[in-house]
Image 1: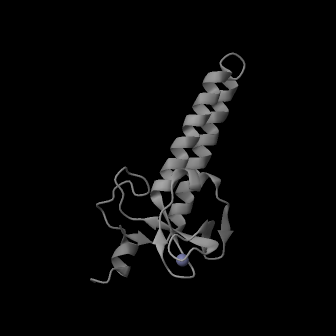
Image 2: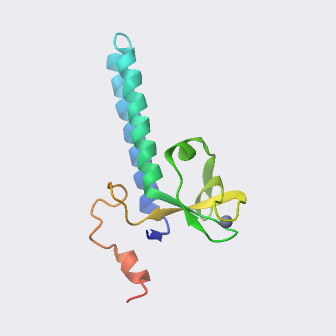
Image 3: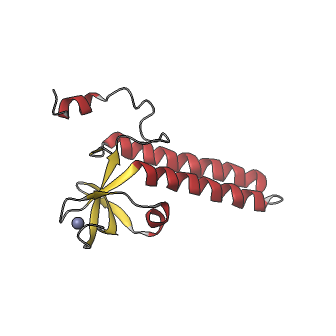
Length: 135
Ligand SMILES: [Zn+2]
């Protein structure tokens, strides 16, 4: 599994997905909330699960103490606190390697089975080519 630093594009993509989810849920609410509220709740729940599972699949974490890189489960992703600082985004997690609890830097998986961050994973990004050790 390869990882790369998050780019501005990744953050924008995350924001677009969240905005899209909120818009769909908001529009659905105005049609469904009075008579079909249970369908609306199911829709909101399913959408949230899809959003979180996508995020959990596409993200990995970098331990600032031992530099270990690891992934977390969907549940951990959902329940652990996270935020933004100068270097990017962080998530408060326990490192599986050195057992320290700290703010882990969020990095991006470049290969994954079920789609996600890169719409066309076979086409390398110009930024990836520049930082490649082969070139
Ligand atoms: Zn560590």
